[in-house]
Picture (cartoon, one colour):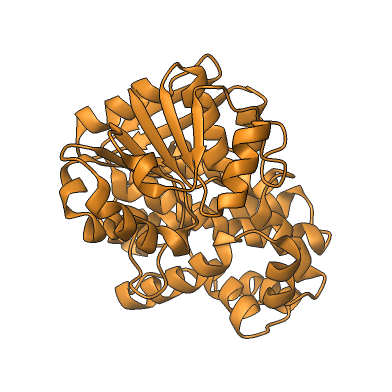
Length: 340
């Protein structure tokens, strides 16, 4: 079948390569016509994913209508801040029953909504067939055909399994999950903790600190997720702890590298200018901090990273405030009378 991948960054390129190797007719859409022409001519994406080679059955185009035409599955692999405009442009081009996949990880700052919610707002016909794709998936390793697992989440089992069948490969194992809220939030919020992991590494902290950060960070993610309707067990899976581990420890992680830069005293503007790519955790921190306040959810790690990013707080002082918080139980929601 024909599958369209909308967005020719690293993850979009990796997904297009997998789908092409699986024998599908693939259209990879790049916003810039020059980029699309270079992809078509060289079969490579040296800027975002130099190790990937696009099979010949992957067509590269800057024509959105041509990319979407007759596609059974459309994967939106744009950065989170571009998902709304991309979905709006796709809306009149999609046939009824098209499965629409959001492969972006993040929250929209203006609305505080998840990516699938934004897609459905702009493409109402996709409501019955919307899928979120998330997990510990560095595009660089997928391009090298290294063993990887991911999650296709949807309220529609048929839509989730259609994506599962399309993407399953000897090196890519796809699981399904009905908890689209939890899967999307795990993918968005882990980037915040990864900023903290980079800060800790940059300050010279050791394994104890990182283990504590990941564990307490996961507790925050789960608290907010449950308040938003997610299932707590989802955060113990690939899109929760799995994605958290890889993003907080990997040399491929842009968010961890951004944390290293913050520890070195660089500003958000300097980091984004030097990276040349979207650091999703910077935006997700702002959105999650606002959501936590709206829902009354305690997220001290997120609050301190927000202070570093948006209040120019000193990273070492932020760590000191976290360590100096009043004593509490590990399951902070449990009162003394319930525990003992």
